[in-house]
Image (cartoon, rainbow, N blue to C red; front, top):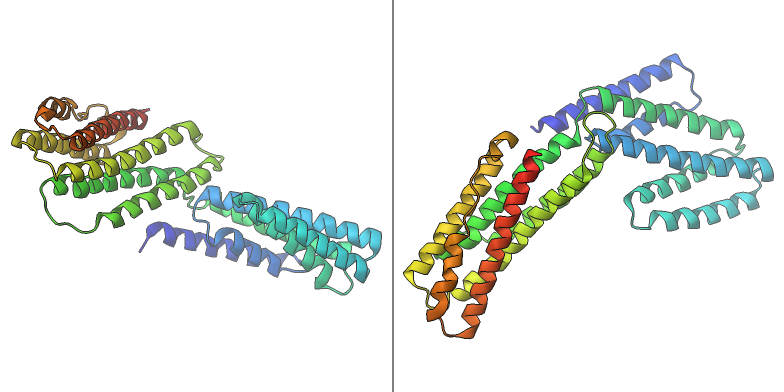
Length: 339
């Protein structure tokens, strides 16, 4: 069983218990909104940053919807025409905002429209008290959800982000092994495209974890620039592996000397060792890991004189160029790990 999911589920249950107990102590007009808000904010948000952001957006959307409803109630006394016009205009506006493509505006727009509709249509005698009750009780639910998320067994995205980065390096090592090392040895392996897709999904997951990490108010401040550089290095390594794979496959149709094959094999082994060391070492140990040497693969250019056909030489240049990119980004990634 996933420990984070278990802890988060316990936290959600604790928050609901607190909310329900509060409704027994204080006579809220619509107590169910407190419980519903806790569930909406917490259920799908394991990390502190995600829950805080969800609560913040729900608060803003509710506030905006309540304000519009109050204007309609006070100025137009909730006449059917004013309610109709308010719903039509707000639906258009909030829908336009919600479909902007930005994650934050999407939830804010939805909550603004839903809040307005609930207040204006929820009771035949819509009043300021009704609007105030919804705003107050949703705010209480948000407060409970965010406090429990932050202070009761908090699960921080920053910690998970580091784990995800290590997992990405391990997958890059496996991908390199399947596409280049096994390819050089002409060994049939499982389809490497599945592994390529897994790495892409991990990179996307890191982006989301980085967003949640930046929203966590306590602890060490999240360094956005540091993460951006790290993600760039991982993407560059993945891209270079794919290009090297294509180039090496094309070179496979040419006649390579035993020495050239040995040079390629030596370089591949050193890259695997470097990626493996980065995946298994602590930031302190990364300082002393060995970078792959470009000397072996650069000797390929000297041995390519016997390859008089133009196309294989072009593929050899592409192979060497991308090998240099991999080494450069491994070195930069290692530097980022120890900063």
